[in-house]
Length: 421
Image (tube, rainbow, N blue to C red; front, side):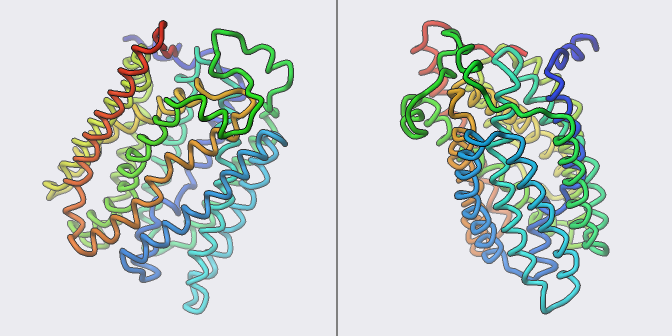
């Protein structure tokens, strides 16, 4: 596997994809607040685990109307203007947080401003996904999605380690930095990315080889019901979302339990950095190794890595075993992240891309939304250490279910679906 082969994986993508890649890098460098949200709410604001879980559930519920609104606006008004408008509003929510944190009388406004920012970001999500679907086809989607995913982690790798050291003494800079990098990302999108909303001419170009992407005249739910495997895929992915939510809920609590609050925050930032570095260095290789495997089977493999990586945290007692766990579940994250978007894009009608991205994200995101609330109550009664056997079982069950769906799909189609990079 030579360097030229690795390089060719990302060659000949549309220019806008490369701009979006750099935009993601910049935006992710400043993604300081949300990875440390659990520690912020517990250590700085004084919430208990159950209260934090309820807050995160509330934030997730606020995303439901935002995502549905964003999907509709994306298909009607266009992708670019929706992204720029609501990314700007989300960034502006962080600025007063830096001030409110310094005063006991205003500190409780911070969680509500973060919920508002979460609402604005949820409107952006469907437009972002639809834009990527517009810019790519089945032949280059896995490469494009994996490159953007890698770019996000390049930024997060830098941002996480910085945030880990700023968290205890300079927390205001986390909010200001998040706002600043978001605004820079917006400038890149505004100046260098054209609107991608499909035209009537684009509708006509979708031929019989992309039957699942052809125009649908009905509403969103009618179109989704014509694609039952996509709906089942989304339901199963709620479990993966539930599992992955532990990276920013149970994991920092586990780190604090093992290492103490001061070292726990720093080590948690280090684990995030390791996660991101692994993504940066292995995403291309894993994309090449898995490109001939059907997306559903790849997600099956991801579930196994999740089960082993997260499950072993039950036995973790020191820094290096925590690192090993991170290395294992990150492989599952890479495989999952580079395949779920491909499967969705390949089964979404061109006329409904924004709305499908919205509704599928809501379905799959349900697991992540309810996970902190459920596991917060579980931790309060059973301790954070007992989270991990539960996650191990969920990983194995979801992996087996995805395999069965893939096996069924393969034997119902005359031609096997393959993803090429």
